[in-house]
Image (cartoon, rainbow, N blue to C red):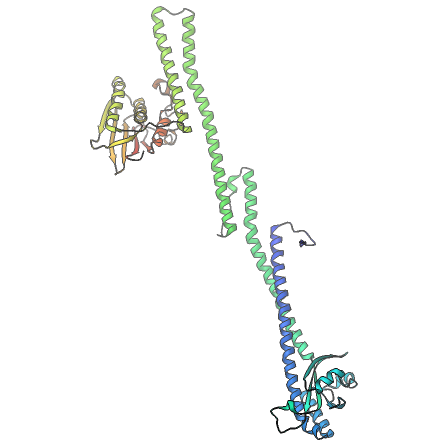
Length: 500
């Protein structure tokens, strides 16, 4: 069963969670390392002390061997006391029956009261084990001090010193020493580990604080930016990014999302303005002809016109009907272009023939207005692949637009020529009134009026350039304009020679 780890208090913020998590990980890591180091130190220092006392026990056994073999108890006693004082250890000598022969004085007077009455510190089974020729090590606990005791057998003197195990055991010695020095060393090192761990926790806390700040600040910035974005304050929704990690990339993605949302909203607002303008413009364009037609029809119905005037007014009604029909056709065509429902009828044809066709269609209107029309076509033009009627519509719209803005006595040029190695250009240039620089970005919009006073007299619908741009882009081409107020205009259509 999984037991969830719960803190006695609830941490709400990510900053606090990161801080606590880092500190807990560091604390547990240091705690495990501290216990592990303490365990290793205890093993090392106690092992070293045990090896030292065992070496001392072997030396004591070899020193008292001769006196004990010859039953020289005074010599044994004198030797043991000398060794105990010089080595700072407690020594006991047992005979071959396990009875104590001598006990050295404690190494410190302060220990005497607590240890003189201790006698032999081995149990009978342990004494028997030592008298069988085995070495024994044990810890002895007393009220005052913890000691490490080593018991070793004493063998009789033989000529074969290389194999003492074949000699008889004539007694045993015990050597014991306090472990206080080892415990003090371990305690001192443990304190150093504790102090070092405390300092490490403090340093880790500072590092965790810095890291948590570095992580949570961008997130807090994203939160504030999201609130600003929800309030429509897109200018204050951007986040400063100074890192390239996951949080930095999240901030960059958020900034990109803000830009896209802002762009989408701007586009929606622009489209809404265009929609309203379209409704207003269409209503305006329809209101004039309809009002005119209604007025003339009412006059004719009332019989107020003479017979010779009826034909004149019927012609006006017919002209208005044609204008409305063109307006509706242009609106439907533009709607199909923008929705992608208009398909092109591709064929291979000559641009020279197309230019001559457009020239012949517009020439009578130019002559009637007194405008000179010029045709310049490069003779090396290749056949082009596209919709012949739609490109003819492009040329016609540009020529009609040039004619509308060129006064009598002006000039219009229709040019078609190669450009670079992969493009052909259809160019319409006029010497008309030109387009002010502030109007150039808007001429492709529906019903946009550069000259507000000319629309009705020109007979245009205000949709020609918008349709032209859509048709050119549908042919994977590009259209651009150069114009200055009073200096005429030049429209250029760039079309690819292949791959239309």
